[in-house]
Length: 193
Ligand SMILES: Cc1cc2nc3c(=O)[nH]c(=O)nc-3n(C[C@H](O)[C@H](O)[C@H](O)COP(=O)(O)O)c2cc1C
Image (spheres, rainbow, N blue to C red):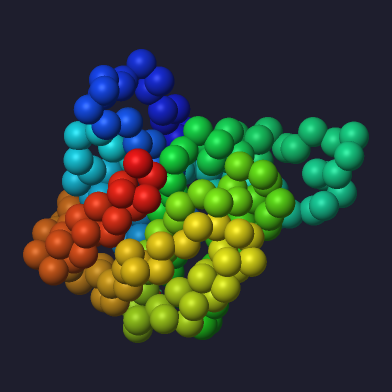
C-alpha cells in the first residue's frame, strides 16, 4: 500500500509543506524507475514528502462503463485519485517498452483523464530505460499535455542504463544522476510552492 501523506506534519510559516506523488511505470520488483523514485524520496529536502505509489498493478483495465454516471469508481482507482488530489505535484517515471509507454502506465493515466484534480497539477516526467527512452518520454509529454497537466519540461529527466548505475541495494550513487534528480526536485518544488 502506498503510505498516506501524514497530514500532521507541517512546516509553520517558513514555507508550505509540499506533497509529491511519484508513480513508476514499471511493475518489476527490481525496477530502475521505482529505484529512481525511491532514491528521490530519500533525497527530498525538508518540507517535501515524496510518496511512491505502489498500486499500479491493482488498477483494473480502464473501462468508461465502470466510471460513468451512476457508477462509483473501482476502489483501486478511487485510492489513486485520492492520492492525486492530496498531492501538490507528481513525478512520473516510466521505462520505454517497444518505443512507447508500458500499458499499465497508460492504463493509470486513462483513469485520470478528466479527473478534475489532475488538470493543472505540476508534473515532471522521468525515464530510466535501456536505450534512451526518448520515444516513451515524448509520448508521455503528448499524453500529459492532452490531459492538461502543468508539465515542467525543463525538469524532465532521461537516465539511460540507470540499472548499471545503482548500488546492489538499488541506491542511486551516480553523481550526475543525483545532481539531475536534485535539480528536477528543486524545479518541482518551486512550481508547487
Ligand atoms: C517488453 C520490453 C520492451 C522494451 N522496449 C524498449 C524500448 O523500446 N526502448 C528502450 O530503451 N528500452 C526498452 N526495453 C528495456 C527497458 O527500458 C529496460 O528493461 C528498463 O530497465 C525497464 O525499466 P524498469 O527497470 O523500471 O523495469 C524494453 C524492455 C521490455 C521488457
